[in-house]
Length: 385
Length: 161
Image (tube, rainbow over all chains, first blue to last red; front, top):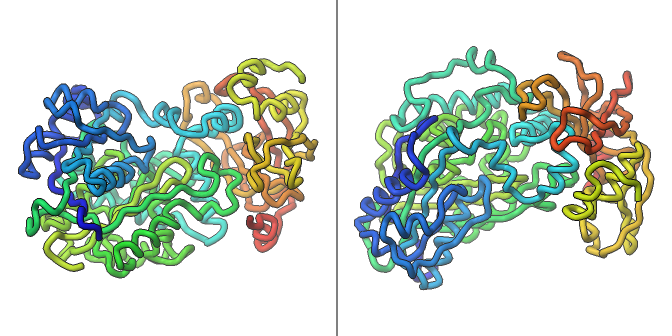
């Protein structure tokens, strides 16, 4: 670990809803102020800004929070990998010595304003989408990833029951998270299977929520605050693109994704392996993508995620509690930045009713577009490793 | 070059796709073949996906293959497809080309139709009314009945690169 290691010093969020009635800027202000205060810093300490989600810019934050006009800003590539992409950029800015406190803010009215079918028009490879795919009616991420899920069922015999297990566990975890959009709304197996089909094998509860809200975190250099036990260290963060990153259809192996390379690289850099991870926050835009990433992150072997999740592994109390906040499927879609926040809560021991006992190392994954993938390994500041 | 509705837009925005779309408008599949390494490939890009050479010729190719994966969409992804659901989108592995797959609609899909992996299909290009954007050719596949490949044959047909 370099001398200028990055640590997460503060987190903040708004309420999550289907209709905020507020602008993304106003949501960003609330989450950003909370993160800076949680870190015990002041707005003028921020010298790096990473806006995520496409709805706000550094300019908005500089004006609304009177941030330094000398602050550097950086933009991760859009899509579901942008949350961890932001953390990676923050680490680079810290390690370069140019920045000391980098503010990451995700803010969007993803439910009441620009929903997913429009947002994906800003992703790479639009020529293929426009002329080869949309005319066939193959348009939304639910349809894209349903195609991958089906292929996994063909090759490995993966079952609908495993998809159900992911949805039901995420919903159960959300019952322990008052912030979750699905808090107080339990889901039974019968309800899961009776829900309308979106694009098979995906039904309603295989698909993540659309959400209005904001989350923020402050990433700082560790050297200035040695011994702060609420700080969470970034042990490693790696991001990769898959082969043919702008086209899935003609990729030789649909299961070989960015995470397949990012995870081993992250483990190597941290000197850890999958068995050292106490809890994992897996980017869960759809149920199958949890299975897919559990395999490629090394938590089980390829083709064995069905048995892994059906053993109870990913629920609280299992060998690898996954998305203890409920994830995108049941807490809300905050671009995966919310997954970093939950890892921080777990490592600080501040996850309340859903606390994983003695959580020392957390993994967070990102998944975006046609298989961009990333993994962060985070650890409590005071403890091993 | 055959003119088709939208050709001028394609020529400006995605010229690599123009030969494919122009042939499709005439009902034929053509695939780019690299001048340097000779390999057929899809989708069309500025450089060869295998050797990064920058020129291609275009080879007429039969529209026959087998089902690689599929999804049946019940909820309209866009309002213009409200009357089209449920419909099946299939990814087809083209016969004889170890690494060319094409995405298209399954023609005459009806609710409950049993689609099987490796099932043989034949395709044709049509211009559908309810697509976005309108008027670009749609690749419509039809199932050839009683023609399911054994599972291992699928894996061999897929190959690796």
